[in-house]
Amino acid sequence: MDFSISPSLEATRAAIAAFVAERVLPLEDDPANFGEGENIRLDLLDQLRAEARAQGLWCLQLPEADGGRGFSRVGMAVCYEAMNRSIFGPAVFNSAAPDDGNMMVLSMLGTDAQKERWLAPIVRGEVRSAFAMTEPAPGGGSDPSMIRTTATPDGDDWVIHGEKWFITGAEEAAHFILVARTSDDPRAGLTAFLFHKDQPGWEITRRIPIMGPEEHGGHCQLRFDGLRVPGDAVLGGVGRGLKVTQTRLGPARLTHCMRWLGLARRCMEIAAAYAAERTGFGIRLAERESIQIALGDLAMGIDTGRLLVARAAWALDQGSYARTEISMAKIHVANLLHQAADRAIQINGARGYSKDTVLEWIYRYARQARLVDGADEVHKMVLYRALEQQGSGLWQWPVSGGPDGAD
Image (cartoon, rainbow, N blue to C red; front, top):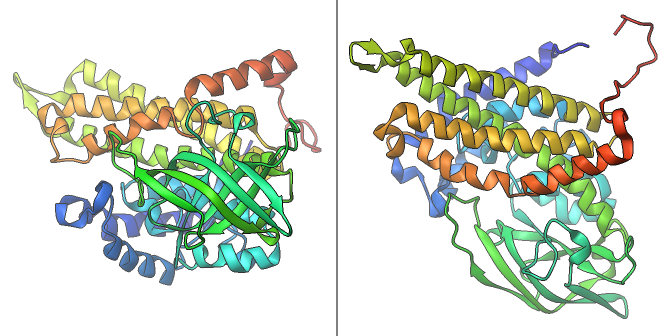
């Protein structure tokens, strides 16, 4: 097993790390740089995006033919972790949710005409996008088969009625991917549609307040009351909506984990720096065994997360859906991020609870990590079902074509 990365990948990682350290991290210290939802101010973000693009640190996740850098999923894991040393980082490099996942699925499943109309403007950073799947109860959430929003054919068009909620980025989005029911077929009953914010027949009914900081555009509830979508705006084919969701959500869950590892490392960095300088009762915090155990445990957890993410990324690069690998990574890294923020705040004491560091921001953000793109419990159910079907085969080593010991 070769865990090394290429010199060119290391050069890109180092360039991203330097850009984050020099241009992005310092912005976190000034409240004036934060906009609505406690994220980076949009005019400032546009400036940094132009700089990142000029340096070639832009859209690593897409093939070169679609305007990206053509990085593998493993390469993305290396670089996304470096991006999210800053809470502002991923958006700067056009690698933040939900645009990240939307661009990848449009690249993989869109027609040439759809890529030109719907993908290219997101790649150029001219518009933002949203993915509208989750619905209020009794509609679909983690289980897409429960989706109640309907799309009914009318000539060459489709007419959509229904409701969605917790749609990330909806207030800032111009391009939307919407999943709706087009038949009662249990496997081919869903279809994905593309629409623009200016099309009539839909509205944002509210921006849902949440406990943590938000992506640009917040988390919104949408109502569809006769949205008309032309037939050429069907993504992936009629009845192929489940494939669209599988194609999008697997890699998107994993890219969350890639970014969260960067935040977990940032928490540990802040905690370790404070423990090294803070003295109490005649001894530095870093000399206390309890602090050493806490930080050592986090170091192990971060490395475990990196290995799980790297394995899942490798499986995606081999053409697998990597469902079990992604579920394992998602469970571990989501909980790791919450644990890292909590321990870092504890080590920093009142300073950690204040806004003098980004720890309280990360702590509030981290709580949603165990819910978004499938709650912990759902992913554990996925793992149980895989175990039930595969038995000990769940842990089977992938076998290459080389001789023993050669790889």
